[in-house]
Image 1 (cartoon, rainbow, N blue to C red):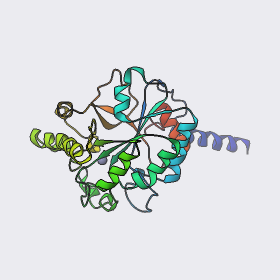
Image 2: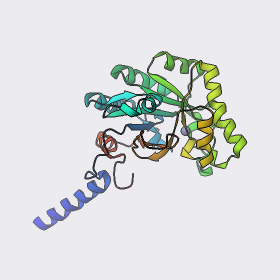
Image 3: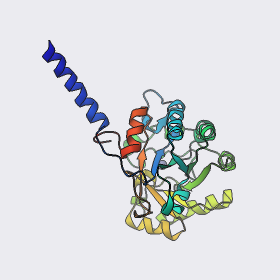
Image 4: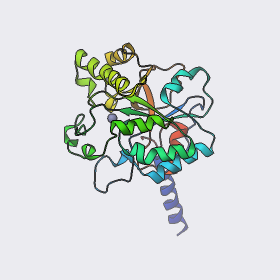
Length: 273
Ligand SMILES: [Zn+2]
C-alpha cells in the first residue's frame, strides 16, 4: 500500500514538474518582461484560438499581481527609450491586432491599477479574416467575427493616457511571403496611416504571426519605428538585444496564476511552453 502511494505521489510530482518547470532560474529582473496578449474576453467553448482569449477575471488577477508585487508598468516605446535606466521589475503589456475588448474589458482594469499598455493595430481590421494567412487550415476559425476597435474607440484608448498605439501592418500580412515593395507598403504604410488618423507618432511595431524576412527589420528601422517585437518566447536585455527583434512572454487564456508567475520569472511556464 505504502509503495503504491509513494509511486503515485512521485508520478504526480513529475507531471507537475514538467508542466510548471518550477526549478527554472529567474531571468535577471533588470530585463523587462514584455507580455503578449490578444483579447481580454471569455473563451468560446469549442472554438480555435482560445489561448488568445484571456478572461477579464484572469487578466485582472494578473495585473493586480503585478501591482501588488512592485512591477513598474511602461509602454513599449517608453521601455526602449528608458532602456539604459529601467527599474528592476519593469513590465510592458502588449495587445496584438486591435480587438474591441481591449477597450471594453482591458482598459477599465488597466485604469483600476494604473497600468499602461501598447496596442498593435491592424489598419484594415474589419471584415478581414487573417486566421488562415499563416496556416490555411485555420481559415474561418473565427478571428474575423471578433469585434475590432473602431477609430473612435482607438481615440478613447489614446485619451485614457495609458495606451500607446503601435502598428501591426495594413492587413495583418504574412511578411515572410512578400517582396520588398509589398513589405515596405505594409510596414511603413501602417505607421503613416496611424499617424495621420490619430495625430501621434507611431514608434512601435509588431510582426504579424512573428513572421518576417531579415530585410523587414531594416524596413521597420528605415520608416522610423524605434522598435519591433516578435512572438519568439523570451526575456531580453533591451540594452544589448536587437531592438527590431524583441522577444515576448506569451500569456495564454489557459494560464492559471501560477503559470503566469512562472512565465514572469523565466519567460516560459514549463519545459516546452
Ligand atoms: Zn496579430
